[in-house]
Amino acid sequence: MELRHLRHFVAVAEDQHFTRAAERLMVSQSGLSASIRALERELQTPLFVRTTRRVTLTEAGRALLGEAERILAQVRAAHEAVAAVQGVLRGTLSLGTEQCIAGVHVAALLAAFRRRHPDVEIRLRQAGSGALAEEVAAGRLDLAFAYRTQADSDQLRSVAVTREPMTVLCHPDHRLTAPGAALIPEDLSGEVFVDFHPDWGPRRTTDAAFSAAGVRRTVALEVNDVHSLLDLVDENLGVAVVPRHFRHKRPSLTALPLKGTGETEYETVALLPPEQATSPAARALLALLETGDLAPPSDGAHPS
Image 1 (spheres, rainbow, N blue to C red):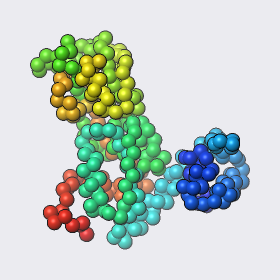
Image 2: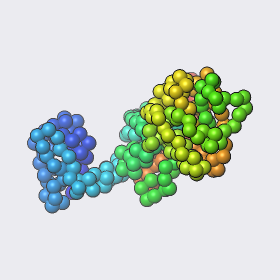
Image 3: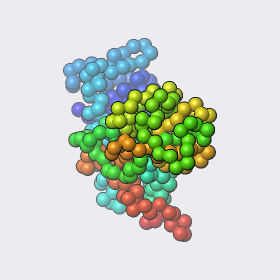
């Protein structure tokens, strides 16, 4: 089994189209088709269901995809590790993050990383924590900042970044608003909630807190970005339970502490593959986060 066959297979699986995959790989369509056929002969099973408009993975193809992505990620990490030993960090850093993640100023972190490692290409993807965990485990992302979604496994490990309590945001005219008031989940029974998609970390944290308290809630307004959530609460269309740092994003809203949730807190972690499969670029980014040295050099020059 050749690495180029696996690269070709992954590209076709991602694009679900031979022509688009061939254009992206800069190979001929006939050559790409021959490569896939060679892989299917070796494995003695079809990997794709082909139609005139697109191709989809067979069951065998789906089984192969995750393994192929991990193999290619490990090969890339090996190349980058050799380059790092030679004193040059290069290659690609594929980073995932939820929006407005606690404890990480992603833009400032990436700017500091680029100043120190200008030869590394940075790719950034925003998604929910569940999807990010799957992409790190599959080798499609080198590192992700997300909510802790699961225990460490042989394909995924986590490094703690920060923890913070959850806060209730509501309109200043809402009935719950009172100076210095603290709420418990029972106080919110029957309220209309604005919240994120169930894959997002804040939603998972809130669901866990209310479940632990035995309080049922209904999310009537579901969004996929922070500003839409704040706008809906600002129009008094519902209340939101969010990580505490969200209260600074819309000072016009009233922020009330949420008590009575036991040990339930929003926990930000860095999700990485196993130690031996972690790329040098991911290690460098995590080290930069841990030191907190994000300021540019005083003379504006790149560090050596």
